[in-house]
Amino acid sequence: MNLLLPLVPLLPVLMLLALVWPVTRGRVMGALWLAPLPALLIAPLAMGSSLVLYPGGIKITLLLDAPGALLLGGAALLWGAAGVFARAQMGTGPRAKRFAAWWLLTLAGCLGVFIAGDLLSFYLAFAVVSLAAFGLVAHDGTEKARRAGGLYLLLAVLGEIALLLAFALLHGRAGIESVAIADVAPVLRTTPGGPVIALLLILGFGIKMGLMPLHVWLPIAHPAAPAPGSAVLSGAIIKAGVIGLIRFLPFDAVPLAEGALLAALGFATAYWGVAMGLTQRNPKTILAYSSVSQMGVVAATLGMGLFLGLAETPIHAALYALHHMLAKGALFLGVGLALAMGPAGRALVLPLAFLLALGFGGLPPTGGALAKAAVKPELGEGLAAAAAMLSAFGSTALMLHFVQRLRAAMEEAPAERLHWGLGGPWLVLALAALLLPWALYAIATGKAPEGLWSISTIAPVLAGAVFALFWNRIFQRVPEVPAGDVLVFAERGSPWRDAAARAVVRLEDATRPWPVAGIALMLLILAFYGLIGIGS
Image (cartoon, rainbow, N blue to C red; front, top):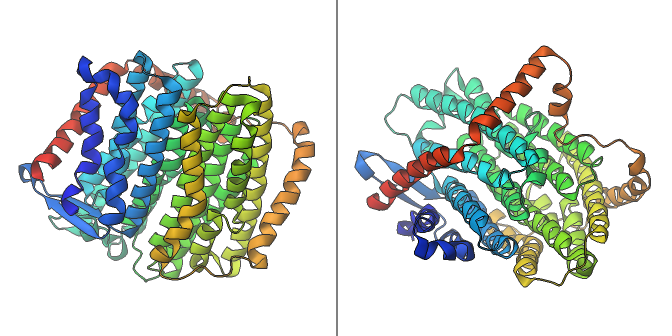
C-alpha cells in the first residue's frame, strides 16, 4: 500500500490537467468527489507505512503515521462530500470550472501535507494549500470576497515566511544532509536556538489554525466563500497547521517548558473565539469563530502534552481535530443547505445541527464526547481541567447560539424543494461526525472511553445550554463586533494602521490578475508531483 501514497496528491493534479482539454473539461466538476478517493482508501489501509523516493536525485519521504492517517481519512471524506455539494450548488458553467481548478489545486496540497515526511515536500504542500485556497475565498468576485482573499493571502504569506525561516534554522542547526522531519525536528531540544525555532513554528502553523491575534482571516474569509469552500477551509485546510505542530514539535515523553506558552495561547484563543462569536448574527461567521475557539483547544492540548511530556498527545489531538473536521465541515454545508431550502428544510437540518452543536460541548453520546475524552490526559487535571470545562461551557453556548441564528436565517429564505446533491453530503458528514469517533476511539487510544457521563462532562453542557437560553433573550441588544475584531479595531485611527490597511489594498490589487499567478503555481505543483510520480 505504501506504493500508492504518491497517488494521494497526484489524482487531484491529473484531474486539474483534465481541465485543459475541452473534451474532459465539462466532466471534471461532476467528478470532484473522486479526487480524494485514493486518500480515503489508503488512510485505513496504509497506516504506519512510508516511502522514500529519489526523483532527480532529490530525496522525498512520504509517510502515514497514526495522526496523519486520522486527519488524511477525515479530510478525504470531507473533500469528497463537499465536492458533491459543490457540483449541485454551482453547476458546470465557466465560473464553476474556475472554482474546480482552485479546488483541485488546494486539495492536492491539503492531502499532501498529511503524508509529507521531509522539509521540502512538507513546505511545498503547505504552501500550495495555503496560497491556492485564495481561489476558494475570493471565488464570488465581490468586493467583500476580494478583501477577504487579500487578507487571507497576506497572513498566509506571513506564515510561509515564518515556516521557511524555521525550516532553514532546523536544517542548519541539525548539521546533517537529511531533510527528513524525523531527523531534524529533535534539534528543537538540543540547540540553544530551539525556543526561537519553536516560536517561529507556532507562528507559522498558528496562523493557519487561527490562533489569536492572527485569527482574523477566519471570520472574514468564511462568510465570503461559498458553502463547500467554507466547509473545507474550516474543516480540512486549517488542520494543515495541526499536523504541522504534531510533526515538528518534540512529543517524546520529555517535558518541554515552552508547552505552557502554547497551552496558554490556546485557551486564550478558545475563550476569545466564544466571546466574539456570541455577538455575531451571520451563522457562517459564528461557525468561523467557533473554529477559532476549537483550534484553541487543540493548541492547548498540544501545549499541555509538551509541558507534561506525554508522548501520546499527537494521536489524542488528531482525534479531537478529526471530530472538528467532520462536524464543522458538515455544519458549513448545513448552512448552505438551509439557505437553499428555507423553512422546508427545518426537519432535515435543525435536529442534526442541534446534536452537532451539543457535541462541541462534549455531551454524550455524540462524537464530541469521544473527542473530549481523548484529550483527558492533557486537559483532565488541575488548572487545565478547569480551563477545559470553561471552554466546554462556552462552546455549548456559542453553538446553540448558532442553531438559533440558523433557524432565523431559514425562516427568511424562500422555501425550495430538497436537492439531494446538497442534502446527501450534509447527512453523510453529520452522521460521520456523530459515529466515527466511536469507531476510532479504541483504535487511536488503545482503550475504551471512560467517564463520559460524569458530572464534569455534563455540567458544562447544561450550564452552557442555560446560558444560551438567557443569551437568546438579550443578544439583540448587544452590539455586534465586526468580523475580524482586532483587525477592525486596529484599522481605526493611527498612521501606521492606515499604512497597513493601504498595504492590504495594494496586495488585493496585485493579486487580482490571477491567471498569471495561477499558471505559475499550477506549473510548480505539477512539476513537483510529476517528480514524485516518476520516482514511484
